[in-house]
Image (cartoon, rainbow, N blue to C red; front, side, top):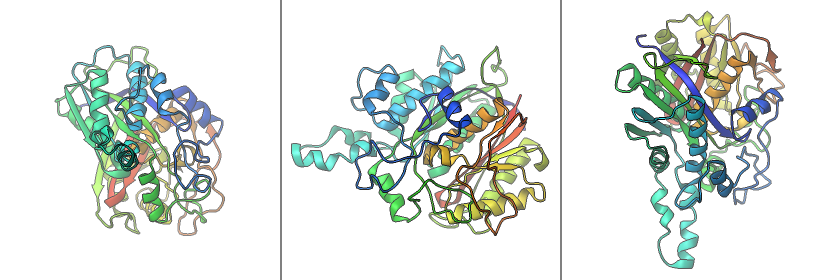
Length: 397
């Protein structure tokens, strides 16, 4: 594989909590963040459950020590909070030589959605239009922390955050950077919610991935980032988090704009590439945090891909989206961090709401929390629209 890459810090904010301890507490007590819409002003209130971060923009600013939210989108505010925690946990005091790769798709839609209404009132452009682009949050977060060595935005739908990690790992392995903060941020917007509604893939109840009667997605919001360092500078030094990113792989099957191939060709290739790169055998994987959206298409496609690669000995599998909702562009690192929290505390978090096994698959997900179990190597899947599929393997040191 070449140069080893270590995860030395992480930060997260989601419907489960505003930091790592609150996230772990919710997971370990099986508290889901999915519930009624409280903050987003939408006609879908009381109809469609989501996983909202339970803070207004003003409250997010206070949490991050910001004086105001002027010209800052919700995605930016979420990212600042998560990046700060990741940097603090990695004990970063100097950001020189650090790269920042952030995933985002919704961008500043929460602000630009206000444009039409403000224009009708004020008859002049809304200044927030400048924040519409998904790269705006990346630039503002980098400015806030003084990161200038390398800055990039990844937008590949639901695989975005995992691809940000993949890109950062390649930069470290090539010697271009020695440290990268990578992850994703996404807020809920009316456009976001309406778009998924038009696809008819939102569940009106809490989602149930890999269940025979699954009915779709619950959208979520949040931000999650990890700090990756090259083996030259990575020193556990008593840091709380220390894992190895031991493999990564991406495959774009381009089967359909919004659907995966029935046999899971792209998912299979992504997982296979990741295993091959890591040098591990399929039997070395102890746990898979599945993409597991709860849609008919994804769960069948991903399930078949898992069986193709791992049968007859399927690792433990669960989707943690019933906890956090589908955080779309942030999902890759939200779920990677949840995976590593489980590894750290010797736990596997269950696939909530599961009741009946899919008849097309020969395995079912973990239904109860598992404790006192050693997970040495775990695979985290993120599969996006357009067939952009990415898998990551994290190993316990």
